[in-house]
Amino acid sequence: MANPLPPGSLTGKRALVTGSSRGIGADTARYLAEAGARVVINYRNKEARAAKLVDAIVDEGGTAMAIGADLTDRASIEAMFRSVADAWGGLDILVLNASGGMESGMAEDYAMQLNRDAQVDTLTAALPLLRPGSRVVFVTSHQAHFIQTTPTMPEYEAVALSKRAGEDALRALLPTLAEKGVEFVVVSGDMIEGTITATLLNRLNPGAIDARKEAAGRLYNVSEFAAEVAAAAIDPIPADHTRLVGDVSSFTPIVESGIAE
Image 1 (cartoon, rainbow, N blue to C red):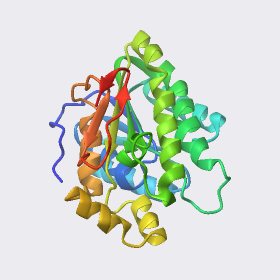
Image 2: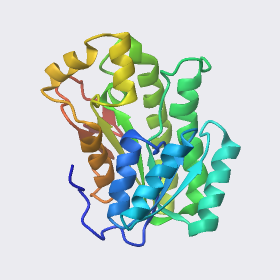
Image 3: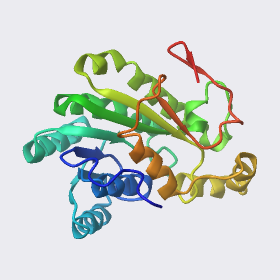
């Protein structure tokens, strides 16, 4: 997939992508780095993968560093941003990509902890580093974004509800962001082929991804969707703060701040 960002368009910018040791986050980080941004690769426990990605970015002429942090732990989040402040002095782009909730062996409320509480805690901790003109990008799915009006498959419902709760909690901070001159955009996509979530869903509900692909006509792959996330870091902000990626014909529109999507 070609980089959607023009070469040099992010020169001098500093970016952090949560959950970026692999998948959508990793490809997003590479796109940002290729466009000239210095990028923080955030990971929870995939240190080796994060280090490998940093090496790849550096080998390609970019600048990156890996910082581990458990986003469900406020102290860990604060330590991450202290490291960013010490190294680079601030941030210009924050991509809230990390999510989960289908993992086994986690607390019953883990989805809410990660997809709602951790998103708010991460943005709150990042705010002192974000200068006017900085941008925050929150990554979600159509199944979560439209959950209030369109039911999703039972196996994904808890995650969808928690991600929608996270989106709503972040939107509640829009007045604060506006006061600081910080921009905000939600990137919502359909199920993405090749992600852990899609794999787990297909395991729990065999044929689910093929059925969704048939209904949508096509599904984006990881690199294609990451390109949309990266582009959201510089493209004009939609009036409703929402960038919809892929087919939405199966979803009932909802209203954000009085603006129909």
